[in-house]
Length: 238
Image (cartoon, rainbow, N blue to C red; front, side, top):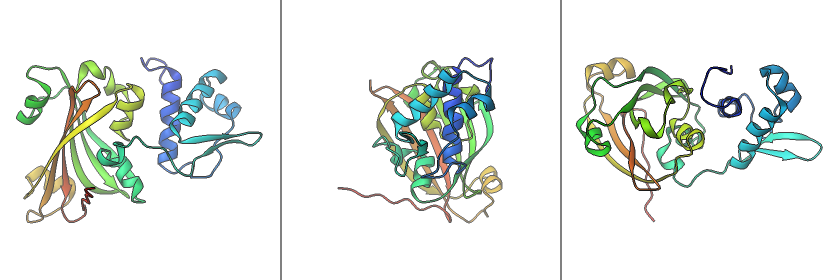
């Protein structure tokens, strides 16, 4: 539901609700979403608010308006060229898998890894989120995200059950233009064994990424720990 006390405008909140409904399959590709007046009544907002939320999703390529018929979920969503490469949600969706996230913690970090400090700066105020990422409801990865507070204020109030990339790109208008990544394998630690439901001899794939803005400023560092028996990374060089 909409939060009247949130610093985010109502149309932004509604837009993200509609986006989540599309990504979760409530409104499937080719299907019509409810008419504006139905959404107005459902959420108790002005029609202009609904229209702006829908217009944003049309501009992103998620929805299309058809004259005299209504608004429909697009068959092919236009993606930023970088998104499928760095977004777990986009990657799973492209594979025909339903992505998900369970938030374990969101707030100020008690400890910041040295690699995050090296990339984001020492004593930089950060937001930290710890989430379990799922594929068709199966735990597949443990995700640790560190984001510079000043570039995404109040992000702790956002819905973190979906794509952090989309929150940063669409709610905060951050343009991500460069990514660095390292990948290594290791045996799982105790908390990873429990959270990913694996045994101590099943390797995990550790992926660390640093994301940069269009001003070439590092602002987001994250560590993925993937279940080695369930996740396969494919890379094509051309």
